[in-house]
Image (cartoon, rainbow, N blue to C red; front, side):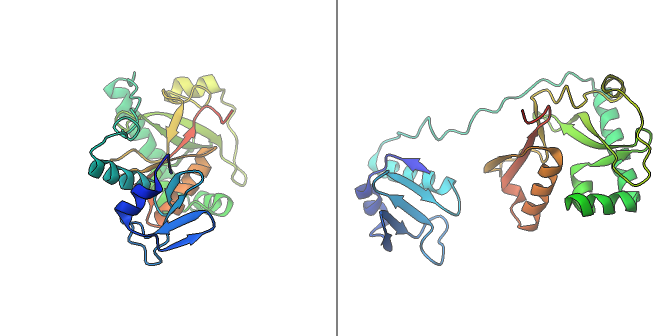
Amino acid sequence: MLENISLDNLINHLGQPTQKIGGEYVWQCPYCLDSHKDNLKYNEQKELLKCFANDSHAGAVLRDINKRLGINTLKDTLKPPKRIVEVTKLTPKQLEENTLYMLSCSDELQKNKKALAHLEFKRGINAQTAEFCGIGIDKELHKWVFPIFSYADCNVIGFEYRPALLPNAIKAKRTETENQSKKGISRKKGSLSGMAMINCFTPKIEALAIVEGFLDGYALFQYLQEQGQSDYYQVITPSNGIS
C-alpha cells in the first residue's frame, strides 16, 4: 500500500477506472492482469493505492508513473531493506558437526512412524515438511530438535530442543547449560540474530512472515507450499521467545 498518490496521475497512467465503489476507484492491476479487473484499488480520501493480490504491485505502478513524469521520489523508500548479516562464530568443523547432527536427528524422525504420526496429528506437520525443514528427534535426549540457520549463509549454527511428548517417552533430565555445551546454541540463548529462519532467504522472497514459535512456522510454511506460494515468503520466529 502506498500513500500520497494523485488520482489524476493514476488515470493518466491506467486510464479510467473500471468501477467506483464508495470512496474507492478500481482498476485491473497491470501486473496481475486479474480477470475480474478489481485487484488495484485507490482510496481518494486517504490517497492510498493497494493491489490486493500482491503488495509490491502498487509500488511498481507508482515507479512507472514517476518514470513517465521524470521524477524519482521512490529512490530511497523502495530500496530493498538492508539485511543484517551476522558473523558466524563457529568453526568450519563445528558447522559440519551441526549439519551432520541435524541430518542424523532428521533421519531418526523419518524412521520413527509414531513420532511422525504424533507430529502430524498434534500440529498438522507432515513428514515431507519435517524432512525439508530439518526437524528431528534426539533419541539420547528424548527431545525434538529444531535447527537454527544463519542468515548469512544458511549454515546450521544451533538447535532448539523441546520435550518429546510421545507416549511412554522418558524425559531426560538435562539442563539448558548441558544442552548448550553439547550441541551449541540452545533455546534461551537463541540464534545470533535473535530470529530463527524456517526457510532460507532467496531473491524470490517478497514478504516476511513472523510467527510465534517454530511449530507455528513449520505449519505456515507447509501451508504456503501446498498453495504454491512458499518461494515468495520467508517465515521466521523469535528463537529466544515471543516476549
